Image 1 (cartoon, rainbow, N blue to C red):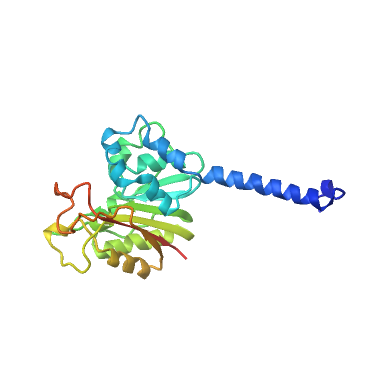
Image 2: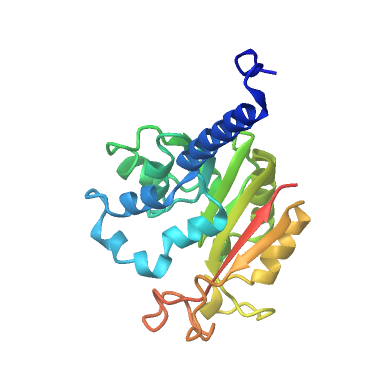
Length: 259
């Protein structure tokens, strides 16, 4: 028994442990709450207006809550593109966690990471591995290694469809390797009709059943899915860049876990 409580009976002891539990719970909540930080990142003055216009469609707070993001995590964002999610994730993780970015990082390296507030984002240089073979509709990845381990989470948004199956397998294998046991892999992408043959209209869509199968092949567990980005009026017939579809594509949102 703690000496200071030896002579004060069980009620004092219970009160002490109840108080300690309350403090620990409060600390955990403070360390893990992301809602206010996401909302602050979305409202940042430095955020481009074009990014703000997509908030309603992309629903970042609900999406990141579904994935289970906490502000003290070590998170890797794959293929950050123009930095839409980078501008949200970096401020959320700045105080207690770490954001890593890798593959397809050239644009944000020159245009986002140089801005104030993004100095602590860790750039993992793997962009040189991305290439597009002549005549192919897909990008390819050569063998690579992220060079980090024990990550809490990896996220990628509307990117898997750009790669051939072998390159997706290579990428997902390295994600599995980089995550800690229990680590999470969140994926959002444009929905392709199941088993539909390739055609010019579905070149930037991917079959969610294939994605699940590929993840299971790498050893991931399927945690679940969300209908956050379900769009009933996307007939899955047209290229996602068409005016009738752009900004309103049906997207699957899925979460996987490394055992």
